[in-house]
Length: 149
Image (cartoon, rainbow, N blue to C red; front, side, top):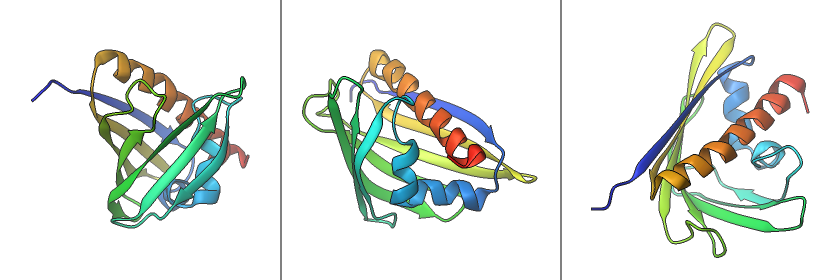
């Protein structure tokens, strides 16, 4: 079996777990932050956040280039955990690899400790590229939840 890489990011958000979970489970909210940079858009997003449900999203860069990804929800534990596959469509360097994302939520008083783990990445370069993308998504998530954007 080839070596795979793991990315792990943690953020403390000034919002209760229910609020953070809703952002990750509601397609209308997901499209507001699932993008790697603030100047990107998410023109299409469909999601059925239940075990076996599917999601698909398209992100658009300022130059008009689009990137599409999708997958299947494997674990949906309200207010605590989401696990889903992540597969890039044609045109992305990792298009032929199915990876897995887990979002863990832990209450810390009125705040939420979010841990995002992206597993099974095929190379250190893909891990590092996804680190940049997920860092931007988490920045957009924070602005959406804490700033009401």
